[in-house]
Amino acid sequence: MSSVHNAQAVRPTALPANQPRQFYRGGASIAALRGGGDDQEFGPEDWVASTTHRFGKPDSGLSHLPDGRLLREAVSADPQSWLGPEHVSAYGDSTALLVKLLDAGQRLPVHCHPSDTFAKQHLGSRFGKTEAWIVVGTSGADPVVYLGFREDAAPERIAEWVRTQDSSAMLGALNEIPVKPGDTVHVPAGTPHAIGAGVFIVELQQPTDFSVTLEWQGFLASAEDAFLGLNESAALETVNHSGFDDAVLGSLIKRTGGLDSARVPLLASDAEPFFRADRLHGTVELDPSFGVLIVLDGAGKLHCEDGSELALQRGTTAVVPHSAGPSRLDGDLTAVHCRPPATGRR
Image (cartoon, rainbow, N blue to C red; front, side, top):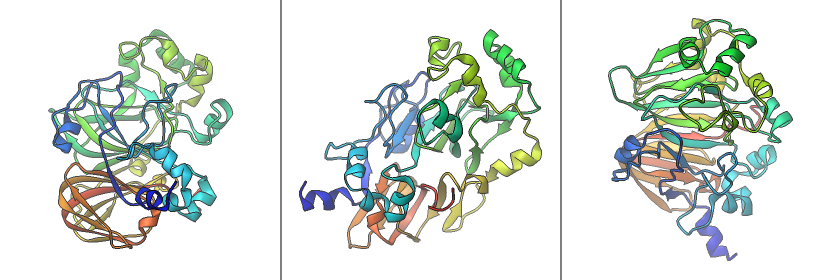
């Protein structure tokens, strides 16, 4: 590979939409943000700067660079430039991050995700799937999300709900939380949850596609698709059956819509070992880091250490390599900046 090709590979790059077909409806809000007309009915997720493939579908979900290469291959070929030496020392050539735009055109099923420990023991993966949601838009009269059981739920009771596919019992047992733009929710691995119709989020995740779908009937073809290839009993070991009281919910949820400083940290402190996210507005200095920029409004530029620039506007999704160095965002724009965990945090 030529040095010129390498130089191109490690500059901030705007990326096209990457919307693998899903089992649930959505996509209109993604199309509206990007300014395009493709609001495909089953394109509710845009996997941004993804080096993660869908579970059981190794050719689906991966992001391509404009020159046609997979981002995953580019990072693997030059991890120091993309990720930085400290990150590589901690995580190898994994970005340790998956970012999505998710537009819930219908309520998602009740589901949860495995922890790092469970994923290592049962799925052969270093990473489980802790995630966080940044609400960037809502529609409808009552936009809500569902997070954790309201009260402790005995494992055998949960197993009965799953066996009988008692959707009303599962959903009714969860905390129902009204949301508006600027709200953020941290979702630890194991937490049963769902996202209501009309909620549009930027979602940060560990870099896997592991989901245990408790409420599969009406969403998936069969129970065989719900449990990651595990038997049902093993899969249900992922579920946190403890109740989430107001104190727990308060530690996971932030309301940032009224904050308008140049840099607004978005996520609860519990999320810091997994990923970082800030809302940026106007002129902001950025430290060297692999990151993902999603421009929510306005227009501006990202100025890099080597003098190169990347034009940004509403709907731009861009991957920023560590080798961009200390950089500067300026213009009349608002963006979400997503990054992996700081090294040494885990």
